[in-house]
Length: 79
Picture (spheres, helix red, strand yellow):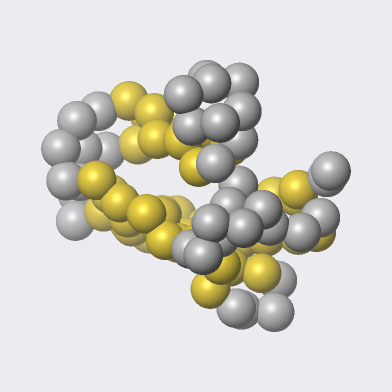
């Protein structure tokens, strides 16, 4: 539920212009989302680009912004 602030994964303190790509540990792109203005947090509803819930497992978030170096974060989804 995207309106629920406790649902999904929250990326905190991201820049105003940012793109976040979520990959499986094998490198398959699962989801991509971005914004071009604003500040603060950006929330991912833990669904792929087809609107389906992603599976339990390990993932990598690649966070890119023109203002910063690319940041890579590993995380796990446990259902």
